[in-house]
Amino acid sequence: MTDTKPAVRPANAQFSSGPCAKIPGWTPDKLKNALTGRSHRSGEGKKRLKRAIDLTREVLEVPSDYRIGIVPASDTGAVEMALWSLLGQRGVDMLAWESFGEGWVSDVVKQLKLPDVRKMIAPYGELPDLAKVDFSRDVVFTWNGTTSGVRVVDASWIPAEREGLTICDATSAAFAQEMDFAKLDVVTFSWQKVLGGEGAHGVIILSPRAVARLESYTPPWPMPKIFRMTSGGKLIAGIFEGETINTPSMLCVDDYVVALEWAQSIGGLKGLRARADANAAVIDRWIKSHNFAHHLAKVPATRSNTSVCFTLDGAEDVPKKMVKLLEAEKAAYDIGGYRDAPPGLRIWCGATVETADLEKLLPWLDWAYAQASA
Image: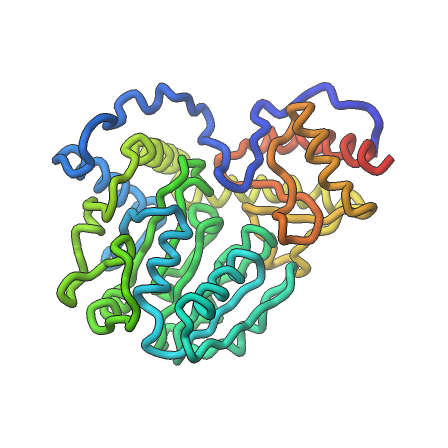
């Protein structure tokens, strides 16, 4: 700890966990050719949307037989679309270890009112016992807990041969962590997270098994228009070729394409993961060198490389005081822990954040903690 105010600030003090920092070097000029004022249903509009889908497949290394669609309402919309469209045919295991996962549990139990739901909920900082998951049932989980900083290590706990579907909310894991698509039937994310895109749009990725469920099963409840992925018992293929269900922002679509092209320029998924790993290591070293800071994720292997969450010794209001001090000094924005999580800090370490900026942040954390604890 130190009472001396650091002399150097991060060049970019944006460490929010969503929307996240824009790609390095971003300016509004990068969107000068966006298809504003034009229809998304025009030939050029569909072409731009298809470009976003194709780049998503290339960067995320999505198998060729998986479908990718751009859908309304961010990751929340994509997850709800999957839950409302696919669940109900069989029992479901709902896994949660942070607030968003618990939100999906609540929706399945209270909104869909499914009769056969097993809730497997772990406290912040831990994972449920994955060995107890029953894959003869459908399984819903978040890959990376955005508000807890806890992620699954890999997909080894998911069998290749399974009866149920695996539905994975991957919004803070996509473009930063290696996911085994062969083990995942539905993957959702929003590009406002790891690639720093503008909000309001989600992406849903479906395996052939998920498509088969859609075409063979009709849920017993009314289906809102923005959730409908089939017509006459067949998949609406256009959704996965650039014909969106509702009107997307072509400005946001162009921004996403720019980010995907940047991702390709740094080596694709491998390069993105390397940047996130390097960033998370900066915060990890700081935590390990300070006895008053503690990772929220108890097991090192399960610690996120994007949403790094940690608690601090002292009064409960210390983190909030630090957040205000750092924002006033323009040294860090939006790094407070999520409102439902234990009091602490949450620093985004995804690939769009520069490692040098995190290095410059560290002395400010020391200073802010000293001020807040005084």
